[in-house]
Image 1 (cartoon, rainbow, N blue to C red):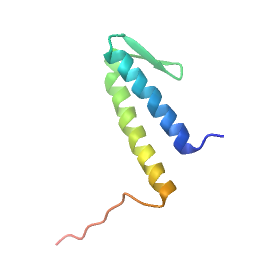
Image 2 (cartoon, rainbow, N blue to C red):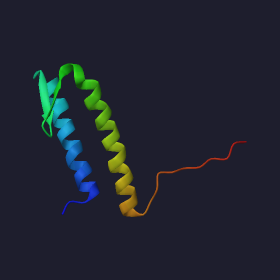
Image 3 (tube, helix red, strand yellow):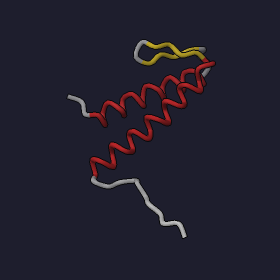
Length: 74
């Protein structure tokens, strides 16, 4: 059974492939049966950023570290 991290990494790879296909000259790409056109490139890139953050967060949780930093205003 896939973990949340594995699922997020697999989804990220699919979105990166869709972006590459569109940028490579194809007018559309597909992820999980959903078709994207060149005009949807901003949607694909937003999902890539979201998945990258999710993967980083899940990796941090798995390693026991955190990316949360706190600061004290002076």
